Length: 279
Image (cartoon, rainbow, N blue to C red; front, side, top):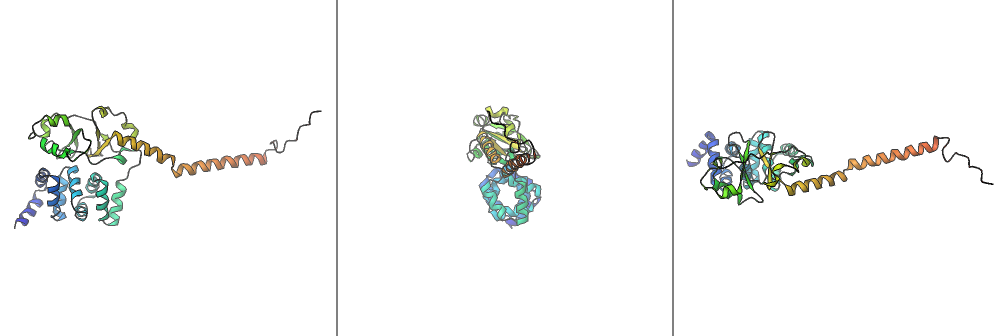
């Protein structure tokens, strides 16, 4: 009977259920969602803050996470999968039908010279309704974070950032929306890597927020990742097979052009009569 009541609640109030699960912690929420049919858990996961949803998918079995993604629209599934870290993402993709897996994999690819190829999805993203204590607990699971990024619970759009210093000096029971929220300019996932190097927020932020087309947080990018991306981009360009082929073709054309001149020009060096030797 209790299972029937629980399932009915999930089906009729997925948004309310999502808020409850966000508050009990990722590991506990994932354990519960792993025991619920995907048709019921998918709408609940879709109402949670995307970064928390992604962490839940990582803690669930790969088969159940794949079932959840199949129950969502393609756009929502792709958006969530972008936030799942690579080692778990590959396991989930392996559980999907090959056609779905290939399509999702293609959607996750970016050229090496854009920010999207270097996103770290493991950044703290919460809502203004979360408490300071929730944020501090979340930060313990995250590395190299100077701020917590906020997303609107309703629209999922980026709101701003709260600094670690602000959190440490605030009442753990206060909501993040009550604190000072910095209006940092996020980085687009489509932005060129070079355009991020001189972002004004680097003086205060270890990681900058990266957003997608819907202004939802996809993760972050650090200066270390930015340098690694720039280095790998240069390396890829230097060994690009297309560049090598182009250079070989150009060299061949130059050689053929020289041979043609030698053969057909009457005044060329090979046909010119030797000048009289000095007396």
